[in-house]
Every structure is written in structure tokens, then in C-alpha cells.
Length: 376
Image (cartoon, rainbow, N blue to C red; front, side):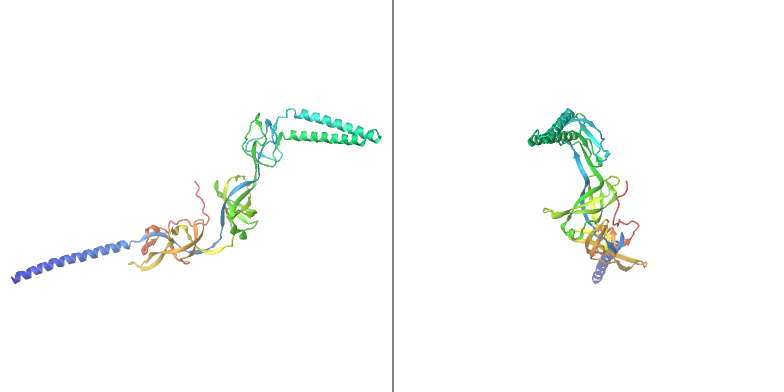
């Protein structure tokens, strides 16, 4: 009986020992597998944080305006007799654009000129008679008044006839013709727009805080969406004498060269003004910074010893940073990292604190301060 009991106990011990050994082996294999999985490095691109000379820019959006621009319209009503211009034509100052029917205007002028000649003859005759004491001074005065009145009526009629011929008030480019020959026009009816395009004005608003750093003659650069690859230099030529009460902004006017006449009134343009002295700031590509509601973060690479092959191991550590202004694809970092630290620029979505990484910079995100759109 005792022998059987011993055999049973040994059998139970062997079974329990086998189960325990299996569990220990399974736990060891799982831990090893998890350890190998956690150690799998993630491929990222990285760059070193470096100081660069940073030119602070004041940016704004403005509207282009012609140095001189007007919608040409007649002063007097009438019917169009001739149109002597083409839509989009460049014209010089004084170029005849349109004539209107004179009707009896010339006949009326001839009548008034005849009355002027008669008044002149009457005045001269009575003036001679006055010297001979034949007529009174009152008669001579009345004759002179009639002569002046006749001359004024002639000049008024000539001015009326002149208004029937519409001329360009200044040199510029005409727009699209709005009327046709034979059309009756009321005073003020637009015929065509005329715009002086070279140079051209750019009006924009800046906050009142910039007034202490801004002066007439300040150099600026402008860009328009219609010509994304071109930069138009200009200068500040006027600063408004008051600040707008509604926005506390001040109106600034700049003058741009427009040699090719590519800029047109009404276009909007983005403006950059170097309104402050250059600074030296720590910069990173904007792709390196993750912007979140709780703060901006970057992943910094740190050394974590060497692997079995003697190769240096790198791990990623997330850190909060304070960012400043941006320019192009770059952003200034005010605090949180130091010069020379290696920062991940792409692949952050795969990382967490302590993740092993491998750096591959064969493809790097753009970090240009003035990126240019690719050509299609």
C-alpha cells in the first residue's frame, strides 16, 4: 500500500513538474518574442537643429490700384457718331476716342460769332462817337457789356462743341468698349475704362504697432497668384495720416514697377516687408513639429548604447517645444531643444518614447525659407 502511494505521488509530481516547466518555457518564449518585436527599429529621417540668420517679415494682403484710373464718360447727352479706339488699346494723352453728333451746334456757333462781330462793330462806332461827344458814356458802357456777353456766348458754344469729342485725359491702357456707334448716351454713361498701369500702386493695411518700424522708402516684395514664380519689388511711398477706428490698422501705399503690364488693378497681392533687424534663431523644418492642442512637440534622437554588432543604437524621445515665427518650410524654435540635437523630420507617427530608430535621409522634407511651386 505504501509502495503504491509513493508511486502515485511520484507520478503526480512528475505531471506537475512537466506542467510548470511548460509554463516557464512558454513565458520565456513569449517574453523573447515581445523583446524582439519591441526592439525592431523604425526608419525615420532626421536633421540637426542649427542657428540661422532670420529676417523677421511683416506680411499683409493688399489690392493693386492704377496710379491713374477713370471710367470715361460724356459730359453732355448725344448720339455717338464715331468710335476711334479698340478694346485693350494703349493710348497717349489727348488721343481722340469718340465723337458725338453736333446737330445744329456749328450753326449756333456761326450765329453767335455773327452777333459778336456786330457787337464789336457797334462798340467801336459808339466809342468814336463818344470821343466826338455825340453819345454818352452809358451808351459806350452798354455796348462794351454786349460785346463781352457775345464773346462769352461764343466761348461757351465752342466749349459745348468740344465736349462732343471725347479724348484720353492721360496715357494708359483702355479696357473693353461699352458702347456702339449710333447709341444715345446720357451724361455720365461709361464708354470705356482707362488705366495707367506702369507704375502701379499696391494698397494694404498693417497693425498700428508696426508704425514705429515702418517709414516711407521701405523696400518690400509682392507676389500675385496669377504669377506665382515672379516677385515684384517695390517701395512704400505713402502712409495714411490716420488709423482706422474699426480695425486699428493703418493704410499703406507702395509703388511697384510694372514694366510688362502683367499686374492689373483689382488684383490682390501678398506683401512681405523687412520691418525689423535680422535675428539669429534656432530653426527646424516645419514637418518636424507636431502641433497639438496641448502643445507643440518634436522627437529628439538619443544614443542608447550599442547592439550585438557594435553599431550605435538610437531611440526617440518626445519633448515639448515653444515655436516662433515661420518662413516658407522653416519654423523658429524658441525653447525645448538645443543646437546640435538631432530631431526627427519625417516618420513621427510610428514613434513613441523609447522607440528604436534607424535614420535614412535619402528623402528629406523641404526646409526652404522661400519654397517655389513646382512647374506643371
